[in-house]
Amino acid sequence: MREKLVFEISEKDRVGVSLPRCDIPEEEPERLIPERYLRKELPLPELSEPEIVRHFTRLSQLNYAVDTGFYPLGSCTMKYNPKVNEEIASLPGLARLHPYQPEELCQGALRLMYKLGEYLAQIGGMDAVTLQPAAGAHGELTGMLIIRAYFQSKGQKRHKVIIPDSAHGTNPASAALCGYQAVEVKSDERGCVDVVELNKLVDENVAAIMLTNPNTLGLFEENILEIADIVHRAGGLLYCDGANLNALLGVARPGDMGFDLLHFNLHKTFSTPHGGGGPGSGPLGVKKTLAPFLPIPLVVKQDKCYLLDYNCPLSIGSVKSFYGNFGVLVKAYAYLLSLGPEGLRQVAENAVLNANYLVKRLKDHYCLPYDRICKHEFVLSGARQKKRGIRALDIAKRLIDYGFHPPTIYFPLIVNEALMIEPTETESRQTLDRFAEALIKIAQEDVETLKSAPHHTPVGRLDEVAAARKPDLRWKG
Ligand SMILES: *Cc1c(COP(=O)(O)O)cnc(C)c1O
Image (cartoon, rainbow, N blue to C red):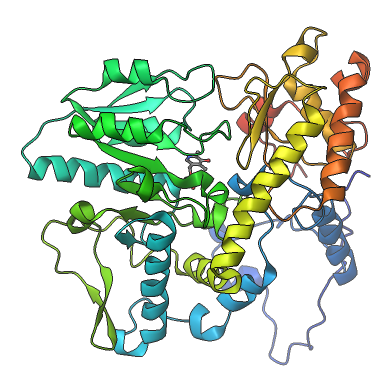
């Protein structure tokens, strides 16, 4: 199974190209290039074309991909993204546009951005949208800058942002980057914001609360209307981390729950594959009062034309070169058009149904800390297994042997030995059953088998810290 390094299969003087004979006199390099610039030996691998094709194809086959198997990481990392959206984003009229092309020559692209902004606003219950931020965290940063500008314009000095203990790490980071003090609010026994605690924390120094809804436990914030009331009464704003929007599409809108700002992770919910570090997009929607602070330029419509508007005196400025990651916007637009309102609602309903189906199948075999209807994802705890010396990491590694990508583990931080599972809307009952059966089998396996897993992969347990800290990338000839 082990694929040798390309240097190890190299044979001296083997070539992968055939070029016509040189028809001008050849010179020795020494006569043309000064001695000190001459490289004595160029250690490049020497291979034939089929050898190189096979080498890289075999390497690619060692990879686990959403196109080859099930990913319980869900929309947050790798839900299945229909290929048609890739096709559309690569149409030459869209893919080869130059960002400096004059507005009158890219009306189609501007219209696409304008419409996408309108659709997102409608889906989230917001009034205006910027498409500029390049990721969710970047949307958070943009939102925090807008909140700061808003309070500055009102002459208010608020310095706190409240964030639940279940939040994604980017939330406190974004608040802190804008000079805010991140204040943690505890979760209650139902996995939601503890409203009694929240009441104690909210005062005139609070600029905003940042919530993910449904939260990272996959649970809907049941008291969201009351929370919105508490924060608004103190003059604060509500920021929604929209990373989990997959659960709400076409069913409920953060804007209707009282949120004033909301970011969309187009690369999570709206059809851009990521998880390999590819470009993302984190548009930010805001309510009317915050719209004047949005980044420039904004795409506006005048008569029948689309224009880029830079004339926004209260704007926080640009947060990204040009207009955001346009290719990702195209995929999201194509995805929305292909689904339509009904299809979008089905995405959320099926995502929630699939998650609850897995909960039912697994809850007798693993500890389920919050035993209630979940949204698009749920979190199991490996606490029971830990008593036998088995860690969440061992369970995750063993899943690889059964042909599945492991789920997120050790997040959210408030669940001991967390296994966070998000099946998404596209998976069939059969796939979910196979996955559940693998996890049930693992729950019954002995310590020895689990501790040494995976057994059926080219490499077993790696020292992941050493691999990250001391990568061995050099060819040692
Ligand atoms: C993914 C995620 C983020 C950050 O979004 P990026 O697009 O990765 O920057 C923030 N919050 C939650 C809950 C997330 O899942």
